[in-house]
Image 1: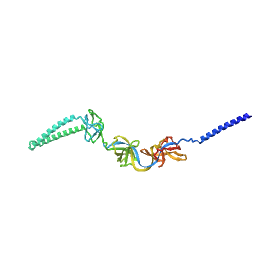
Image 2: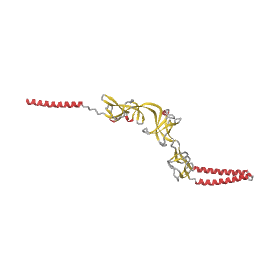
Image 3: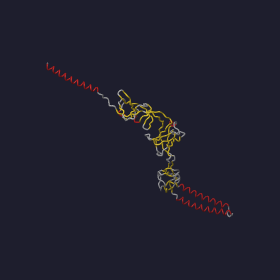
Image 4: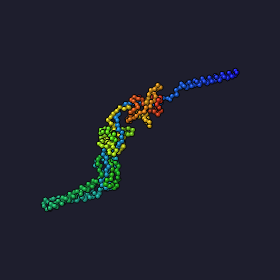
Amino acid sequence: MRAYLLSAGLLIAIFGSVGTYLYNKFSALAEMDFSPAPVTVNAELAQAETIHRKILTVGTIIADQESVLKAEVSGRVSDLFFKGGQTVDDKQILMQLDDSIEQAELRRYQAELALAETLLNRDRELAKENAISQTQLDTRAAQFQAASARVEETLARIRQKRLLAPFTGLVGVPMVNVGDYVNAGESLVTITTIQNLEAEFNLPATQARDVQVGLRVRIETANQELLAEGQISEADPRLDPIDRTRRFRAQLNSTDLFPGEFVRIAVLLEEQTEAVTVPETAVTYALRGDVVYVVEQADTGPIASMRMVTTGEHRGQRVEIRSGINVGDQVITAGQHKLYSGASVTVSEDSPL
């Protein structure tokens, strides 16, 4: 009996010690904070900006003057007097077709003209003395005029064998080489002026109503980097009957673009408005909608609050927010991939607040 009581007491002491240990252990665990560590983020304040409403479209750069020079007559190319990309002057000779036959005919007709002129002058002297009839004198005059016309005709055919620049500009790469035979109407070279470039674009009727001559335009890259600026100088008074769009042209202030280049065009409307803008990095684009995380104060400290937003125009590195954000809201610009609504955050000291 005594041994039994001793064993029971020993067991009670052991279980009591274990229970006390476990109680103290779990009490310590209960007092520990297992919540995730705050996420370090960058943040900026949403700002108010005055912006121009604009219409975005695409268009083509065109030259103020551009022409495809073609052969007036058939013939073989005997000389080229230019290289592609060269600046040429107005009326400068660019290409010569073989005109040896015409030159030979010219010498013959010039000789006939000289003879006809000599005979006409002699007959005029004889007519003064009534040595010849008026009919004979008229015949000599007609022969002189015919010889003169043949010379002029031959000179005209010789001029057709020469390709001249119609205006000062840049010539393209020649489409033929020396020795090639060209036919009348065949394209030989292009010539373009690049001092006064224009942008041509079309707008649907719903947008064209808000656009008029004098509005400013911007030529931009896909990232909205400015390439050139200008002003709408021409507007078609009617809509295209096929696609129901209206054509516009804008005079540009740049010569760094190329005629034929496909560009992005922003037409700046006269309407101005106050808008809320945030850095572009603050917006998370998703299929369910665009999201911006905002820093809010809670009892436990700053937390991230997810806001569904409606975005508007992009202005450089900033985005217009049309709904979901107010001026002065502290928006998170970096570290969003670790966030969820209600997550604890710590705003980095490097944030430009």
